[in-house]
Every structure is written in structure tokens, then in C-alpha cells.
Length: 428
Image: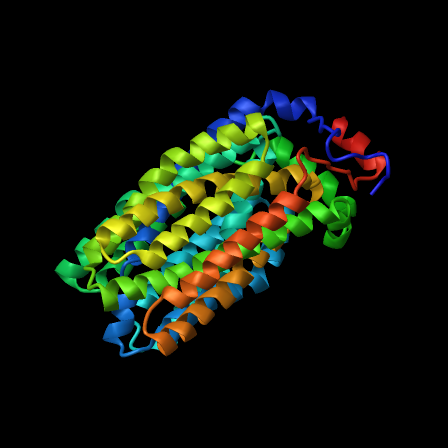
């Protein structure tokens, strides 16, 4: 990094063409956010079902942890390559391929006779999601500027979380009325519907395609991109890992406590996820816009600390009121750090590597989703409750907040890795 570049002083100038297209870009962001809301309805439908499915198949808490980890492992392996693929062939083809795989995974879930088949379906789901979410985030980066990127990521996150308002509740009702397998069929149908909408409505701009073609002539290695902002990327990666580690623990510890210790029904668990969705729908847009005005860093730090508070509430809760309160606080935390982390990643990254870096950061966060759920499942089998595992999650969340406060820049420094002759091609 050049010695005359200072984190608190450098600003980024976006290309005039990109600024002029930002309004049309935001319209495409709204379209993609709508598509994500449909997809997340299907994804949210099955969330309350997993613990009951595990009980029906006679599996253990560790098996539930393995299901979560299988999803994350395949995302770790494929997030970078599929993110890079979206740089080469475009964002839309990768998203369509991923949606088709999502639908197939849910069909396999619906007819799974044992945990091993469910593990295979979960691994497939992780593999295809490794393509969808980096491509979607990179698409938003393609069509926005630094001045409105936080807002755009907020819309994307808002659309994603909107599915959690109705999806889990629908899943709980379907499970009670028609059995734990029916929600997976409905999720597959919803995913195929999303595929059709993406195919028809989401359009990649000619300017974005032409720019990728220029960039790919001499695309720099990912390590070269990371070296341009080593400290910032490292701090962002550690913070993401800590946050997702804590969420991975929560996903196993909370759902098992709710079902085994407190006897929650599928509908009650669905309401819990719906509460998080309602808070996040409004919070993502609000905090996304705020990050454009006041900066990214302290929203990420604050979100991590508030996340730790929510985990402590889950540790001490003994009834639905306590769990629902924890869900509200968790929704606020997710809203503060979710779109802001994605926007900061895009701010730091040269356009030549949007997809690859989004994929790499996805791999970092998903590695935490391997360790966290496995640890939570093992501790739950040993202790009979989720308190110990949630305590570990609180510590990790605080640690992530500390690293972010020390390592993330107050203002973004982006040092281009594009050669001068390529830069002139992009400007022409």
C-alpha cells in the first residue's frame, strides 16, 4: 500500500457513466430485492421444520449441527469459484443455475428417508447458494455507486428478510396441518417461481457486461486485490467470522431449546423468525441508508455488540416472551451489520474482482457456520441445554466488535489494481 494513502483522507471517485446509470441501477436492485423476497419465503418455510424432522428421524443434536455445517462446507469450497464465474459469464446465469439447484434440494428434503440423504440435500443447497448470493451482491455493486451502495444493499437485505415475515409462519402451519415434509414441496415451488421472475425481470446492463470484458483481459489475482487493503479486509473477515459463528450456535442452540426444553410448536417458532423478519425489513433499509450518510464502521461495531446482547437474552430466557424479545434485538443487530458489511466489502474492492471477493468473504462467513453449529450440537448433547454454547457465542460476538473497532477504516481506501491502459479502456 502506498505510504501517501491515508485511511481517513482518501475518497473514491466513481465513473461518470456509472453515476448517470445509478437511478436505473436502483430500479434493478428493487427488482432483485423482490425476487429475493420470493426466494426467502421458500427458504423461511423450512426453518421451523428442521428440529422436528430431526426428532422424527431419531437423530441427535450433533446431527442437526452437521446439517448446518454441510450447508456451510460446500459454500466455503464453491463461493470463491462461483463468484469468479459470475465475473466471467455474468451475474444472471449464475443466479438462475443456483435457483434451479435450490428447488432440487428441497425436493430431495421432502422425500429423505434418513439423515444421510438430508445431509446430501443440505450440501447441494449450500453449493448452489454459494453462487447465488455472491452473484446477487456483485450485481448490486455493478449497478450502484459508493454514494448509494449502502441503501441498495439495504433494499437487497430488506427483500431477503421479507420472506422471514411470512415464510416461517407458513411453514409452521403447513407442518402442523400436513406434516413436516410438505413445507419442502412448497419451498421448491416458490424457488421455481423466483427463477422465472429473475429470468424475465432482472437484466444485466450492457455497460456492466462491457466493463467486465475489459477487466477480465488482465484480471488480477485475488491475493493482489486483498493486499491493497490488508488490514481492512482482515478485520472485516474476522468480524464476519465472529458474527456468523455466533449465529451458527444460535441456530442450533435456540431451536433445540425451544423444541426440547420449552415445547414450542412449529407455529411459535415460525412467529419467532417472523418477528426477526419484520424488524429486519425496516431496519435493513434504515441502517443501509444511514451507512451511506455516516459511514460503515461504527454500524458494524454496534451491530456486533447488540448481537451479543441478544445472545445473552437467549441464554437467560425461559419462555416465549424472552425468546421473542431476543428475536427483536437480534433483528436490529442483523439490520445494522448485514447490508453495511456487504457495502463495505464492495467499497474496498476493485471492480475487476467484485464477484471473487464477495465469494471469498462468503467462504469466510460460512467457515464459521461449520464450526459454530458443530460446537453447539456437541455441547448440547453433553449439557442438555444451549446455555453453554450461547455463552461462547456472546464472547465471540464481543471479540468481533473489538476487532472491527480496531481494524476497520473510518473512511474507505480503495487502491486500483487496474493497469493504466485498462483504465483508459474503461473510461472510453
